Amino acid sequence: MTRNRRLRHLFIWLITGGGILFFGVLTAHADFEDLGFGARPMGMGRAFVGLSDDSRAIFYNPAGLTHLKRTELTGDYARLYAKPGETAAASSGLFSMAVPLSPYKTRQGRNLGTSGLAVASFSLDGGPSENIVWLSYGNTLLERLSCGMNLKVLTQSDALDAATRADRIFSRTGDRGGTAYGADLGFLYNLFPRTFVGLAVSDVALNSSASDKLPAALKTGLAFRQKKLNTDADLILRDGEYKLNAGGEHWYWDRTFAVRLGGGYGSNGYKNIAAGFSVNWIHMVIEYALVYPVSRAQDVFGDHRISLVYRFGKTPPPEIETGSVEYYYEKVMKEAEILRSRLEKAENDRARLERALIDEATSRAQDKQNAARQGSGPESTRQVQSSAPRKAHEIQKPKEQKPPVRPKTYTVEEGDTLSLIADKIYQEPARWKEIYQANKGKVDRGRIEAGTVLNIP
Image (cartoon, rainbow, N blue to C red):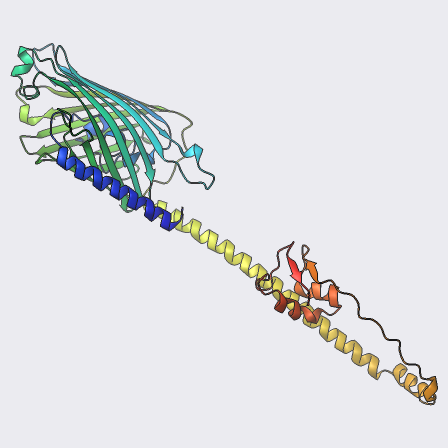
C-alpha cells in the first residue's frame, strides 16, 4: 500500500470516528450496564484497552484484533452480585469468535485484517435480561497504527419483582424493555518498543429515537508488553463519571500458567480489586477471575468468572513480539539485507561493464599493434620494391566494394554487450558508442535487457 493510500485510509477512519463520537455525545444516555467480559481482562481489573491482543479485544478495543495469529473461540460464564443466603443471583454468558483473514491476502499481498462475532447475555433469575450481538473488524492502517470497529444490537427486557425493585443495582431501570443499536471505534498505536497506547469510543447510540439509549464512553489505555509480563492502565469516561483500572499478568513455565492482579477506582463509589489465573494447554486455555467490589463488601461475595478459550490450527513457531526491540531490529536487518542485495547487483553490473570496456580497449590495442607490424615488416618492403618498376598501365585499381548492408535494428540476445553488438554489425567493437548514443533511453549504464530492440545508426 502506497503512503498516499494509507493516509487516505487514515483520513477516512478519523472522519468516521469523529462523526461517531459527535453523534454519540449528542444522543448518549445510560441505561444498559457495562459489566465487562472475559476472565482474563477482569482478572487484570478490567484494564485491557491498551493490551487488547486476543478475541476479547472485541469488547475493549477492536483494533487489537489485528494481533491475532489464529482463529479463537471463547466461552465465558459469570456469576454476578452473589449475596449471602440468596439462591437467586445475576449471571452473564458470552460466546465470541475472531478469525484472522491473513490466509486470504490480496494479490498485492496486503493483509485483509481480522473479523469477529460475539453474543452475550445478562439475566437475573426471575428478573430483567439483556442480550448483545457484536459484529467486529480490525486491520492495520499504518505501520504502527491499527484500527477496528464494532456494530452491535442490544435488547433489554425488564420484569422486576419485589426483591429486584428494592435492589439499587436494578431499581433505576424500571419495568420496561427496549432495543438499541450501537457502534464502537478503536485505535491501537505502538508508541515505543513494547509500549502501546489504545483509544476507544464505545457504546455510541445509532438510533437516537430509541427509548433506551447506550451509555457512550471514551476509553484510553497504556500497556507494556513482554513475553512473560503484561501490564495495562485504563481511564474510562462515561456520563460525567470516571473509572481508573489497572492490572497485570505474569506467565510462567513457557506461558503455560499465568497469575493476574488488578483493581479499579472511580466516581460514584466505584472500587474493586481483582485476581485471576490461566492454565494454557496446547490449543485450550482455562481462565478464572474474581472481582471483589470493595464499595459493596458488606452486601456481596464478588463476581466470579470462568472462560474457556480454544485456538484452531497449528501452534505458530515462536515469533518476535510485536512492538519489541527485537521486532524493530529484525525489520531493520531485513531492510539492510535488501539494500545489500541491491548493492551487490550494482557491483556485479559495474564489474561486468568494466570487463567489457577492458576487453574493448585490449582488442583495439591488438588491432593497432598488428597493423603496425604488417606495415613495417620485410615482406611489405619486398612488396614495395617489386611493385616499383611496374608501369602505370599495369597498376590495377582495386575493385570498389559495396558497403555491407546493415540492419536498421537489432534485438539483444542473452549475454550481449554494446561492444559485442558493434563487433557483430560493424566488425569494429570501438563503435559501441554510436549504438549507445542512438539508444540512450533503452540502455541503463551499459546494461541491456535481453529482447530489447536497438536502433542501429
